[in-house]
Amino acid sequence: MLINKQEPFERKNNMKAIGTTNLNTQRLILRKIKKEDAESLFSFGILGENLEDATNIINNMVQCNDDPMTFHWALEYEGIAIGRIKGWEVDPHNNFVQLGYDIGVPYRGKGLMTEAVKAVSKYLLKECEFNRVYCMVRESNPASNRVCEKAGMKHEGFLRNHWIQGDGSYTNVHYWGLLSSDI
Image (cartoon, rainbow, N blue to C red):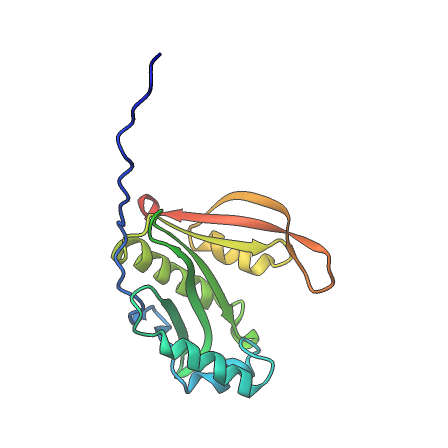
């Protein structure tokens, strides 16, 4: 009887845990979240049910600003925090991270989020040495799907009835990915 003896699996952590750092694009400053961002992000409908809730959320984020496994930026445009972008579901074993983002309604449709997604993706793939950055986007959000496409991500799949919505129905989700070898 032959027994297939394989070499023990060597767990490698190839990504660099260097956390959030300031990034500049043509029009944006991507920086760590600050306590002062609560009012602006709340007023744009990005965080919290009320200002107190938004302030508590921001305070929790600020506490993680120096964590090397936290990747969370405020999008500053003309001196105002107009949105945020974060790397979450960080998997250092498999070297991937999921992106999530929000931007205030008055700033949508101007290419600002695409600019931010490109900059953060490049940082995560090149500087932090992740192998993969991905986004999962509701089918009902064509603008966000377009951001992923314009940011150079590849459409990798479609997940049927993947996320539950507030009314109890399910929605389909598009899966977008970008590899370090793509940039």
